[in-house]
Length: 491
Image (cartoon, rainbow, N blue to C red; front, side, top):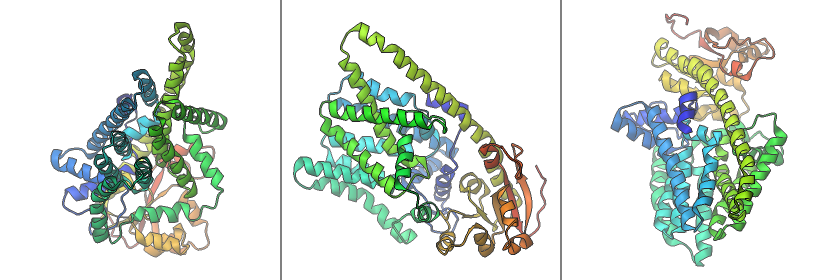
């Protein structure tokens, strides 16, 4: 199903190319940097970047192919480890099959496993650590958990849960587990501190300032956003009631699975992690990117599958009773595949029009028609930054501390452009209308001019009732008046 999804959509996240750029520079000897010469800890997954750099040095091939192969192998590994762990818990083959079959139908997992991000590696390492914990192998559990922290530091709550459960079970501190985690993760902390000047990813600071620091919406709003996402497959945005109903059923079945499966104390590791992760995501309002929900969602779905498998087992061996459940099973299959197909259409169009017809061509245009030392200010950093190979300044500040400093001072987007004065900036086609309508736009309107427009879907900045994809695929490149003139052909 993942290969079919990939063949049809060819979708890759824009953010994946930020990691690709770090890996490319590392593999080519430029250092663990995004912009050459700027040591900014602007990467969310150092381990994934190292794996991709190793891929480039070994195979000298397409980095996207490497990311997809690593992602698919990790996705397979995660389900193998989950299957093996459930076997160690004496859960029957039928129950395990039902538990993992849930993942076969999930378009959300198809997307996350093939989108070029580190998500499948996270799940693989979590499941590996869980398996080692169940087998009472503290050193191996610690190694997997340490590597998990290399992959994404926000999963530290998993380490806390593993240590806590081991401590509770043995009535003494799990020294081997703690030492193994520290032994694996400490080298990265030392390197990050000496190389970047801080062990804290700059991305955390930038996202806090850009998305969270000024968000005063009720915590309940964020909680409900996360809960609505805990469904096996994607439902349309306007199906709010169905989202809550399906999420409620999923969570209820997950709770049933934890309570009614033999040796449920081992499953409680997953349940406690899920609860703590839900609380943490809600408290820090980390709902601006749904990929942060995936570890919680994956575990919820696994436990939900166990709940369904347990119910199936409780039905007994009666052929009549089990046959009566077939229509419900077929209905779920049909709905899942229908929703998956609808989502595939959406992701395919995003790839075709936004990524392949706008973002990537913008990057190639900047590479071909700007001077090597040119600076570019933009928000969609991934594709453009990777293919442009120019000094990038991103509006969120992921790799640009100067932007974060200005945002801290309350400087808005137009002010950032005026103060930084990049040679070029990339902007949505309708955003400039807002800039020009402001009374304080003198520097902007005097010193910048529109150089080229990328508009594959014919978006009208002043129009109405146009799709979000039309807008998100329309970009303009504006150049500073002092930028040396260049010659190019308009596409």
